[in-house]
Image (cartoon, rainbow, N blue to C red; front, side):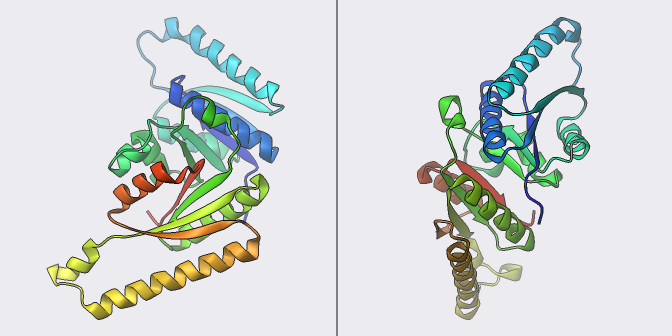
Length: 253
């Protein structure tokens, strides 16, 4: 499996995108990889008046990268944000997209933000969603929260997260959410049987056991935490309470 060799960070000059830039700079510096700073806009009528400000802001971002010893490029692109970012990832052969969002809410769109949520669905590369603002986004990553549904894509993302944790000397908390709704109604509204629930719980225990063994074998400090509730609410609450510096979502969709 390939690891991160280049990073694309999306910026819109908001407080949240500034935090995304800080996090991307920290990662690029720690991993010794290039950083490609991309601003995407849908050309407004006042673009001629705005262009010089945007160019100046991008130059400031490039200077911040240089001060950290990070090789960077800057691009000001026009088009649909997610489509254009996907193309930038391809053009730069980048392995990671970093994007800012407004933080944690009750539903997935509120958790990750509309653009970030679209990017997670439509971009083939891993997407790092940064919800912090201010100085915290520039701090070293000491703890990674990895949310898994135990699908094949999640297994691949877990392997990448393990490698990232090794390189950053970070710990990992692996969480899996069990939705109690599955115990109330199975297919066609028929209540799930005790046997079905027991078999599901045994599969989850086996997956968590395999994950714990993988953590031990990798030498990465970590833990596995089963959660109950809806995926969105349970994950949002764990993000709030865990003190994690980085959240990775490994899922099939």
